[in-house]
Length: 158
Image (cartoon, rainbow, N blue to C red):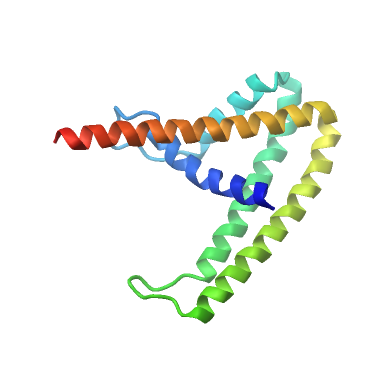
């Protein structure tokens, strides 16, 4: 469960890191397509995937990511609080329980997709892919931290 929570947190934070990569462009917007491209390239390289393996694997991989994102987004929309209004204990309880339910749903989805993945890549290759995905998340975290440090130094100069 901790791994799922960590993975979800990294996924959310990774979007910020992608924006941070090109600090020379001031009005750069997040592009899901660009993110997926970088993620795919990184995982393919680190897991030493063939083009055939990637062609079979990544549609499933991105399909799962989309489903997980939708589940989390729907839960957040459902439990949206009014701006500048502190939620009640009951609202917080409902939100915490809803997010726990979403985590269980995501875990079930991930288990189902593991079976689908194993139909298109061998188990050892899937393990390499999962390891590469973790490396990608750590890479994004490092990029984000470098960007924040650099941005902090730039702001201090002003």
